[in-house]
Image (cartoon, rainbow, N blue to C red):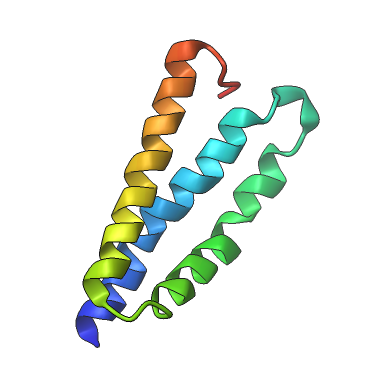
Length: 87
């Protein structure tokens, strides 16, 4: 249970920030949604952390959260390199 809790708490933070950051990178700057999206980080983090308990195996939750983090941050970098990011 300790391993699952560590996975839920420590790996869900980067995954949440990557998801919210990807949404912020895709939104135009003029919309004024940056602050509401940043305020959405805490509820989204709680949801991702709780969702990791729904998986049957701890390693599967860790793998999904690491893949979501790497994929999200990778997409943000690709958007920046392509010049399509507003951030």
